[in-house]
Length: 389
Image (cartoon, rainbow, N blue to C red):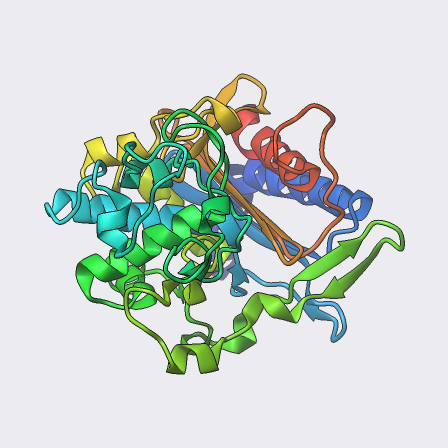
């Protein structure tokens, strides 16, 4: 009886191995490929997540969360993800549109509390949708960490915030746009921006993260590193997790919102970002929770401008990221970090890749997706998606 049980146990183990070995092989090949990419591009660390058939099928972290202390990067670490943060703000706006509290055609000046008009086109209304699609004609020349630069009551040079083309008829990626969008959320709801996103996006999806540094576990922060092209060295940038505690103490609701950087300040892990990505991949719904209606989610993915692969509302196309696939998502870069969140909504697969520092090389003639992100996503695609299609 003991021998029979032993044979059956061995057989069970063997069958499990046979069933799972293709997946093991895919992971091993992917990890070997990622190790080579990291070596060639001097990466500090990389966290990845792969979604296939509407499921997270693989997560892994490589390299270091902190080089100086030899602290390995894990799936539990969180990063300031930079411009992917914009989609969290846009998601909240869509929720408020559904609730009848906002319209995408609203005059941004009326929403934000001071005049917002391109002086060359004083009769052209700059709408909320224009901000969200970067077609507002605004630029970052007067800074974007405060609204003072664009506020004519605070800055006599506010006119310099505007480009020469008419609002709605040109595209310029502009961080100020989304710090203003975040301010609109705060003024519309009466809830501080970071708390509103937590209550209406993160908590419903069961995600850990946020915009306020002091509300997060600092032991989970992955150090971000700036890369020096001449020395090929990585230097930590402490500005990435500046808590701005004193500024928050003097916070003015409906005006100080850029302190939390709605345009780039979300901190989250690659795995939780993948869970969030699945909500967009499924047009507003994930884990049985609907954050917005399908039509509004699709609107975020509908191009307003042909720029950046087709830019919608905080989501953009990436037709040349993976050969034969039209991906949708966003990238981020700040303080040495490079991040990517791209998905294929019809085929239900997608990727999150975040590096806390690397050689930011780009493919000649390509868009703004750096080689570290591009090559990593293609490595993951080849090993987890392409081979099993």
